Every structure is written in structure tokens, then in C-alpha cells.
Length: 167
Image (cartoon, rainbow, N blue to C red; front, side, top):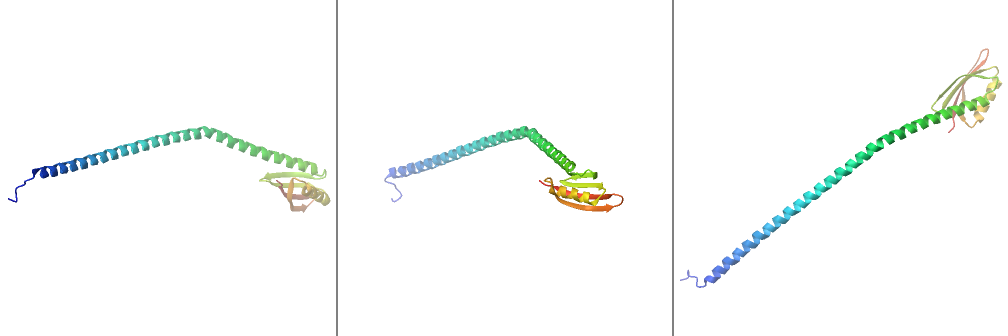
């Protein structure tokens, strides 16, 4: 007699609770899966949106660089022209300074100018004229580090002066 269940409602209650447990478990699992899918879709959507914004910003940057490129070329060309003008102006001032301080008894044969360095070669009849010319070059505001690098006397005094222009 111990196999007989006198209270079948307990059995049905147990079955009902088990069924509810499975239904709640499966439904919560479905809800979690659904929420996970929604989260992944939002993540993917935000990533695509970010990627589109990045591409748009990158396109704008490239467009700005392409617009700036001719301007930068013009600026570079302008700087080169200013540098040439500055060198021409320095050469002009150097020649004007030399023409003002050159004694009438001296003759300049060759003047070389490169990288702020001046090589001046010439002729004169007397040593004292050469030394007066050297003193005037040294006292001028345009030249400094004036050095007499070569001196020889034949029928005339031939000289070579090396000088650096002051900045």
C-alpha cells in the first residue's frame, strides 16, 4: 500500500511548479538573449555611426589639406623670393659700402659673395692705401672679421681680402 498516493494534488502541484520553473527559466533566458542581441545591434550601430563620422572628418581634413596645398606652395615661393630679395639687398648694401670706402687710388678686380662671405681682390699703388682701405672696411658697420689673406707686390700691390658681413 505504500505505492498508492492518497494525495494526488501534491503530485499535480509539484508538476505545476516544475512547469512554472521551466517557463520562467526559458522566458528569462529568451529575454536575456533578446537584450543581448539588442545590445549588440546598438553597439554595431554606434560603431557604424562612429566610422561614418570618422570618414566624414577624414574627408574634410583631406579637402582642407588639398585647399591648403596651393597656399603653402605660395607661401614657400614667397619665402624663397623674400630670401632672394634679402640676398640682393645685402649684396647691394655691401657694394654700396665698398664704393663709399674705396680709395680712389685702389681698384677692385673681383668681388665674390657667397653665404655672407665676401672675397675682395684688387690692386693699388701703395701699401698705405691698402691699409687705409682695410681700416675703413673694419670700421664699417657692414663687415666684420676682415682678414687680409693674400698680399704680393710686383709693379702694383695685389691684395685679397676676406670679410664676413655682419647680421
